[in-house]
Length: 537
Image (cartoon, rainbow, N blue to C red; front, side, top):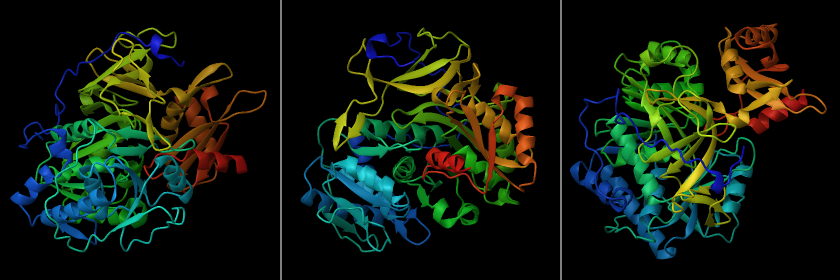
């Protein structure tokens, strides 16, 4: 069901019944971020941290270590160069690896009042070229010494090179202020099913996310936050939160360095906070003696996909007894919608609740008939409140994919495609994606439920389910799984277990056992590649 803005529901849920740190590190001392967006996203907060403890390590990527004083110096230097060469508000692309240069580039662009479109240098060239084509970029920023495949960048596009190892010896830079809440950053969606799409954020959006993250986890100067997410997406929040509180951001590239190296980092460098997707953590947690790697962890934030009760049980068995586990649900267009610190007394088997409503957001739950859902009734989730500014197309801001609230036209509304239901206690349960539900022989199938049943099969370590259209017949359910020790007959056994756990019509027509599930840079399944694998067989 696709609604237009004149059909939007009018019953909105806009209250969070508990604080953001409820059930989490409520008693851990910390200093909430104060000041306006200019101070937090500019260089004022960073300068304050550098003045307090200039020699403390602020950023470490395994090779380059930068103190707070050095980060401030490099950021001042680059910001001066950008302001001298580019007009206020100009869109610029940065080609980033997961390294110490990335946060400095982001900080400098924000301070210089530019619209930054970061591209992960580890992405396929086709994706990077598609993002560049949509960016409208007037320049590209690169880090010196990185072996970047930049053949897709037009030679006429100006290049600005940052040598992160060289002192800038720059004077203080005062943030250039553009139009109120002008686009500061453009993040491109994962592109798991096709061409990536840009979403633009303003200063208030970014500051809201950073404040909430700091307040939820009580981030302070003693923390070491490991950033495994791409700094072209969710990793930016980790970096800003660390550098705004005097913490250390430890940047690691899981794809380039491997699981074993990342676990060694966590164990030897005292990592205290990790945000990541449950799928990858399921694999990590089954590595022998993994407990050593997580010995210093005090908070684990799960996001990006549904979390199962079996996940929580597994993670609890490997994490320190006092480590808090949180769940966050959001979208690129909305940032965080739901969050909570997990309490096993509040759920049983199946999918764990996604959380309470995030401050500053309102949600409406709409049934298939277009009515507002009641307590315990499933429906699609709409979001309003502090969202992204809009879509980014061909170098400009548009409202594509966003609606306007008919009651308050100044407010954007986003139709998420997520199926949820509200519990009487204020927790919202995530039931799956609307675009991941289909009818097989006239009966409803939820692919997330099939995936959960497959993951419960002994020996299967991961599972992704897709649909394949068949001419004149119902769509076929196709499953892709990985196994700890692939054995003959595993596919047949898995199919039978799915029937036992769900229903006969939900059993996959085909099951492919792979060495690994192809994934995008944000670790979501690459559905395009999976469809190609299925089509070849």
